Length: 208
Length: 414
Image 1 (cartoon, each protein chain N blue to C red):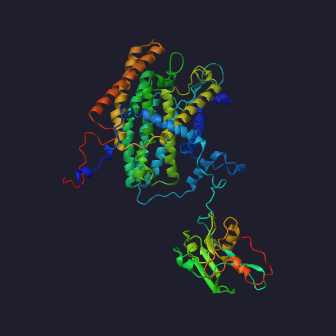
Image 2: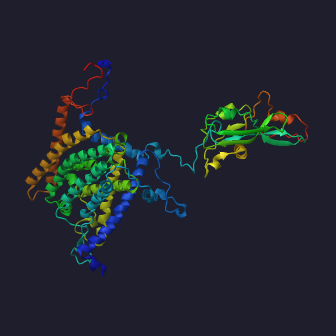
Image 3: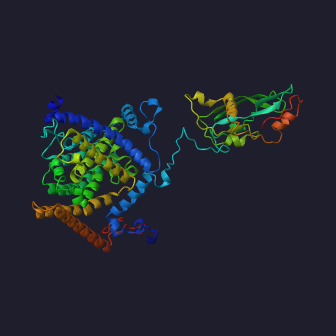
């Protein structure tokens, strides 16, 4: 290191002039600024704080990563009526992708013809989860999604392990503000396709 | 009946002690809320506004219950005494700090003299103890305040605490001198170290507040008071960025709270002191109840309210300055005290001495004020000249001290 590479930070700032050396003029200047902020003359009395429980910021519902949900989908049953089932096909992609190992799935043979497996148990430890969204990225049928729900509280650790029922219930709670995308993926029919095949006893299209 | 009983100064002092202790402790508690509120407002925030009183009707009352919640929290928190601390001193330090700070209230004249039974003769002083050496008592207590800091820092067995305590000591000892010199101005002018006589010398016909006569001494005392109470911009003993929390580092729970209360109590005493010495204590001009001649009980209450109003106003200034100025560096702090405040203080004390010598006994107020101002202007002119001279010599205020050799560059073969 050469001498000219050494930078003395004291040389960078201009020396104080005579008035500033008495501190009082700059103190006065600063006090004016402080007082104007205090009485809201700058920022026009607008306090920037959001008073949380009463006021809430609008959420970016589409990409906020909050509590998970398990999507449901429509299909036409044996008897031709519209029925709902869990969209998950128990492929374990999310559990494999999960960096926090918080997803636990127990799979069983599917009772439906269009898929091999379905989850009999689907547990997510919401305390262990880091809300990275990798499960959502990994899911081939878009069955697991993160919602915009963030005010998640519980009184025990057990309570915070969300099982399949809770996750499906979360879908019911949030489907209005964030509808399921339900894309056409190779090998898997969309809801419209699933409703179209099979006897048309109840030919009513679903709302989505 | 009760009036008769109160006519004894001793009885009156006892009652006043209880009242003042209650009011001041309340003020101390609310000072912390005040501080946080002002901090928030200066930063365009709301500040604590959630805690009401016991959920009373669901009202929040702008967070006025916050000090109660804070106090409760401090009481029920775990009180950690670290291993290997010097336990007796560790426990004693916050108590010393708080006791010494609180003792200062004993000599503050809150409301002049009072005529309790309305017979035209004053009966008692609205002051807990009317000491002949009231001012020296306050000065002594101010100097003792550092004991709590030093003992706390030493007993904590923590290097940051010790650094904080050492800084506190050096700072306090340095700033005692400008404070003493500024006080000397008021003492010379009044010719007494009795606090109520200093007030009386500033009020009434032919007198005015010393802040008018000696504005620079007033500013000097005000500024040095910040250092004396370890407030921003002189809060180096507890500089968070450098010393964790300085001498407070190892304290928790109520012991920490006691240091905290001592700091605010110190501030209140300091501002009351400032008001007495330079702002006429309980006096405001042109208001009949606030003159020394009116001695009714109502006048006493008015005077106490004015005194507390002045204290609150200066507390507010303390808090504004906190959010205005950044912390001084330690060498800047020392240079401010020794190279600026002490010479200015000596000059001002000299001016006051000359004024007292010249004025004799029958100089009119206007001429006396003019004389004082001439002296103040002379001090400022000398200070500016010295400053210009120093600037010509290339001394830099913000930078490294001019007379120190340049720091050799690393690896330049030194």
